[in-house]
Image 1: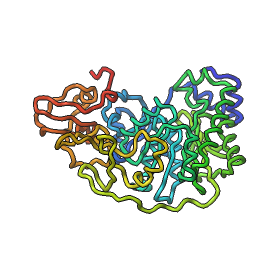
Image 2 (image 1 turned 90 degrees about the horizontal axis):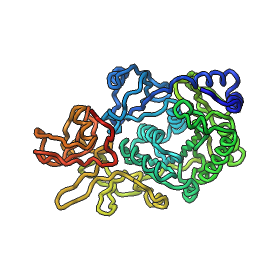
Image 3 (image 1 turned 120 degrees about the horizontal axis):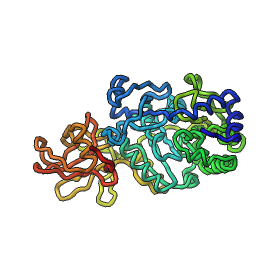
Image 4 (image 1 turned 180 degrees about the horizontal axis):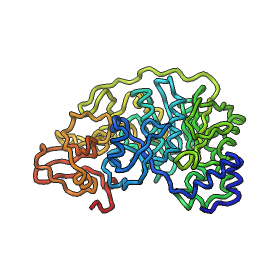
Length: 447
């Protein structure tokens, strides 16, 4: 891979001459492949199960409790479990942001978190799993993406992951200034010059220039300044990029310290291969298996926001576990976890794309279940009968082909593969009607 002298110079300035040589050499190697399991759906998978499922050797990622490196790249599109939100395909280096976040929130039990530049959803789903492990149901995660088309992709991936405590929005970062001091933690994986994408995307390499680095640096500072008022006193900002140079990384952290009054904080001991910079951490090709990531954690001065008490009246719903608050969105019944419902009024200024989980629409005496309900981790196992299907039938369902399920009860059924729900059908006996949304269907040949 041909890289410019300017790139090598910027790289050496950030990670030293020897580090730069290691990275440049590694850029000629194939990109790595890694996945992160959804603990709510595949929480008991071990190394042997992961290897057997993906058909190749698997290695645990040191900084991710559910992350696995794969020796080969499967055809993920033809794996029904991907479409059931059982795992997310994510670069192993990018998973370090989740580890920094977990260390930052250690000891906290009630949190409001903003994932500012969230599409396509890798870090959002990692944060959601981490928050559920730390806080149970007492958290709100707002996942924002300013680009409308990318926000649609984000909302789709959040729905597949299935955590109803995630709220999806699509606004400019400056819109969050109206929520002054609202968030305990902000994760800002800002747009960057993309040096960590060189092995996966040749266009990123072609577009790299010193001018583009300067442009990204300025854009990142605007984003950070715009969102800073929304962080609570004593709150934490996890800053990350998928690039290596000092200007977009340590340089911007230093700028936040000098301009915004932030203070960079350390993470303690980190796994072997993670490169410590002056103010943060870089994961570099050749030093770790992944493609590259920079991460730093900063604290805002002042006292942390006290944990909020219960503020809304909840009730049981026959379709869901635990208690929720029911709302209407037109004819659609929507269930919100208590933590989300308690702040729904404040978040309305952001015009959320999704909030809580869509349960379904009442038609006559029947509730027609919404497709997202099948994917929700709060769906009660007893709510709707299940039909366990093999891979061939699972792919046929995901392709929106007609299924025949003569041995299953009539009415609405939850289609499952390896115990993971994929969606709903209405079984009429001699045929089924699919509730799989057209926009989610597999478009490639499944044969």
